[in-house]
Length: 90
Image 1 (spheres, rainbow, N blue to C red):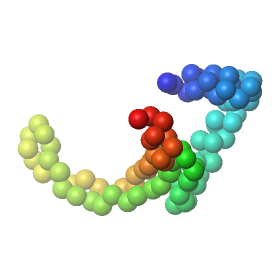
Image 2: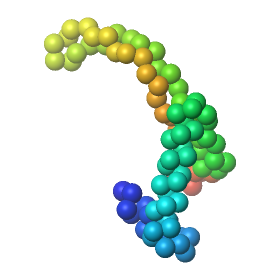
Image 3: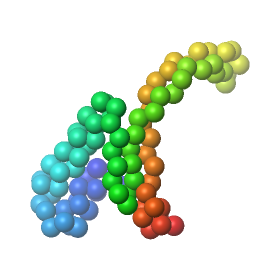
């Protein structure tokens, strides 16, 4: 499902217009992005939680040459599904 399909599904489920559903989705994305940027954790009971984790620097290998390379440390976004979502999917 892409963004346009998600907006259409949100509009039909909630009774909102597509324009309002797009505004709501964009607002959710912006709020989530800003919260994760500042290091906050977002928890939606029953759905799941978003968090930021630090991945340390490490040594890797170039698969073509076999030469060792240094992989820089970085922050990664993690999502852990809630029990209700996991139960529905399974």
